[in-house]
Image (cartoon, rainbow, N blue to C red; front, side, top):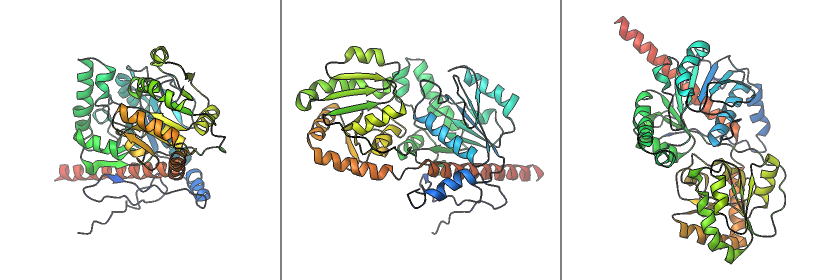
Length: 420
C-alpha cells in the first residue's frame, strides 16, 4: 500500500511561512528530514530563519528552567534555539519558567521557583497567556499536565525519559510518585497530543511508557559552528565537560583514572560546576583538575586540545557536548545508554562500552592508538558539521503546524457531533 504524506492545508498559515509536508509513514516514529545547511546552502538557510515574514502566531513554551539558571543543560539549550528561531521568523514567543531568568530575543516570564512553578503555571496562563496559538510543554520528568488547563493546541517536548533517574534523585515515596506521574499520568493526559523529542532512544522510551508511536516526532539537535580550531595538546589530555550532577556519573572516571593513568599518563580535566563538585573533588587523585564553569572561549580551547571527550552519563536525551567535541574533531567515549547511542556512532565517531572494565580498556587503547583516535575524530567532525539549528527549527515548525491543524480538525469534528 502506498502511504502518501499529506500536505498541510494551504489556508492554514504556517510557522514556516508555507504549507509543509509532514512524514506520516505508519508504524514509524516521525523522523523529520534535517535539511543540511552546508557551505553551498548557508545563505539560503540564514535567509529562511531571519527573513520569513511570519504570521504573528504566539507560541508559548512552558519549561522548568531558563538558560540563566546555573543548572541549565541540553534541554534549555534546545528550547532557547527553537524559541529564538521561531521568533526570528516573525512569530511572538514566550517562555514561562522558574527563576532565575535572563534577557532573550523573546519574552521570558519568571513563574516562581523550582517547584512552585508547577502550581503557578495554570494561573499565569489564565492571567496573561490565554491568547497563545500553541503551547509547548517541556516535560523534564515532572509534567505540567497542560491539557488539563489549556484549551489551545499542545505539543509535549521530552528531551529524555527520567524513569531510572527518579530513584537516583529521590527516595520513596517521592521517587515512586515522580515515576508514576511521568510514566502513567503524563502519557494519559497528553494522549491526544503530539510528542516531540530529539533522539530515537527517547522515542523508544516514550513508547515504553505508553505513548503511541504514531504521535511521536523526532528532530535532531544542532551544534554551534566552531571558531578556527586551536592546537591539540601534545601531552595526553582527557576532558569531561558538563554539569556535575549525579546522573553524569563522573565518579566513574575518577575510579578508572587510577587504572588508566599509570599506562597513558597525562591529565584528566573536569570542566563544569554543579551539586556534585565537592564530593568529586574529595574523591579525585593525582593528575585530576577541576576548572569550574568555563567560558565559551575556554570550552573551545579545551575541546580542541583534548585527545578525547569522556562522557560516563547513565542517560542523555542526545548529549550536545558530544557534538560540540565532535565538531572540533574530538571523539567521545561513553556507555551504551540512551542518548549516547544516538550522538555517538560506535566504532565510527567514538566508542560505546557496556561496563567500567570496557571503559577503562577503551580509554587506554584509544590514548595509545593515535591513528584510530584521529580517524574517529575526523569522522565525528564530518558528522557534526551536518547538524544545524536551522534544520531543528524547520522540524519544530512542521510539528507546530501539524499540532494546530490536528486541533482544528478535532474541534470541527466535535462541532459536527454536537450539531447532529
